Image 1: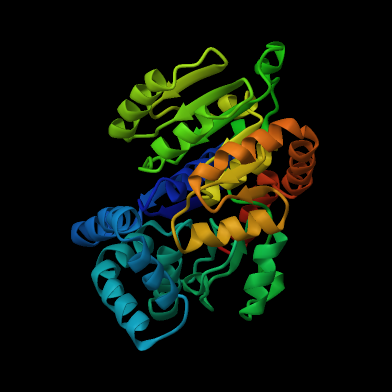
Image 2: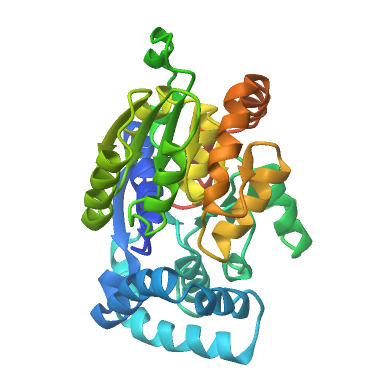
Length: 373
């Protein structure tokens, strides 16, 4: 009998949705009947607008306030419980009947708030369905933790340890990796190596939201002494795209090969062609870079989970964080001159990538569905 899986996500940035889509692809190919549901869109248009648009506005325009809220929600307080209580009252009238009527064999969450709410639903509603939560960053946030969650899949042994420190049993934590598209697990040849004049290829990107710091980073990279190829991905931010195109003309140089893109679907191929990636350390992007063994330089990040991701990557020897964007110039000149450092970082990422296993994740899902009729 075909097992039915609900995959709940939320549109705060693109990472949670991409993880959900990767899971859907893998589970569907393994014979599961899958359905992706945006938890906030399914239950409350107002709440969805607050969560999706509010997140974008906070991280872009009020990052320090977002950081304060991130820390405030990282511990159990009357304020946090009040907020989740209000959210539950808005969402439960839609989600509980949906789950009770459809009766999935497994519920998956790729978002911390949704994980918390699903745990609450299991605790208070007449629902006895296993819930599998995916932690899409490298340091656990307390919002993920709920006694009714049956299992967690995390990105690293480090993440597992941070969860154990919060009292979660190691028996339900599986370091199988943050879900990413299959294309990021496939190796291809770096075509830039065929150009003897180029000393290295740098991929500059800032995620689906783009970043107002991209212009500064691009300017710093155009000042590098060595001849390089520079691939720039601006995401959905058309203003940044136009600014970068203008700056390309300003800094026009014969020893710089520059390709500028907006939103693209071929990031795996662009990573294959690159020696270094300069980007924000989102959970999905970091995992993709690890799987492609492409060392990371981090000149900007959102406060909260991205800062914590950056700390993990730097401490693990997979990334370098620069204090100021202008420091990209001497940092890249030094790395290109000392290629062995890039190689060592890449080898560290290769070791880390071996822990990632979508096959083990699918097997875990099969095991969890065996508990349902």
